[in-house]
Length: 356
Image (cartoon, rainbow, N blue to C red; front, side):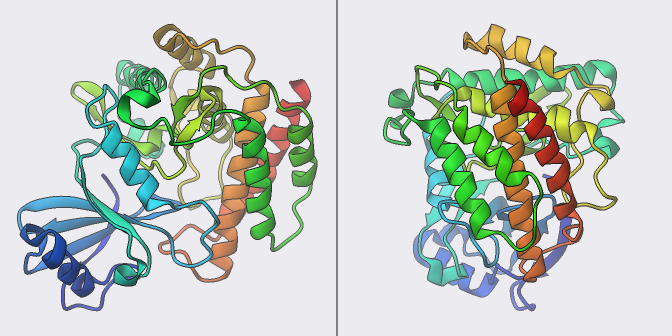
């Protein structure tokens, strides 16, 4: 993982959201081999939602995940959900980090958290990283991303004890209702067009895919750890929104990142708003979908509605982060302009849903 922030040792003033003294005492009770002295940590920049830290316990390198500070939206930021799915996928073809420990007790760090092993690879967040790649490496990275998604969508949930991980029936309609509810809980200003987009999505929900699949819920290049020599995905990260549902929702959201945000110049310095895409020398969205369809056997069909849902979902997420920033509940820089991404997402979403 890349872009670490400042480093703290046990005994220093702890970083927001991570009290190393309390963490060490908890590890002493549950995983004493990790309760080393000193315990060191770094906040990993780049995440827009959950907080992620590198943790050094002696010679062991771990990653700690916990929800953001304050204004946690209902059903979001579920640490137990993340921990369960990466544990379930450990022996499949889907590369995931090794799950180490789940702490459901919010009294330890102020919220539930979990630990996983640090995996090799790099998170490619923007053009400053991808411009150094050759054309062949960019193509290979994009294809590896799609092969990994296809591998995820071909895992039978019942084969990995995830048959009860979600309700595939009515998944798309529930997604619209869920994100409409999240929007209502994050409203702090007038957002032209977003209610129209919500209503059009609700009125035109397509039939769901007939077979419920494990969906990631936020699948994109910068939620992957990847290596370049050779080109491969070493781990899929950030499973907080995973469930059983329609695999086309993952594709629609990926296209939103790839071709909508990938084609929009974000306000300078916006945290996590730059996304690689065709403009950065990567394959087109159509090429990605063709690769996925060939590897997964999923009947893709038109994706305009799913793209519109992706735009609505990301607009709501950006607005929620904007709201947390106004309350002083974000860590790091670049959050002051993330609210500016809402309007272009709404505009693209309206165009796509009307085309559908």
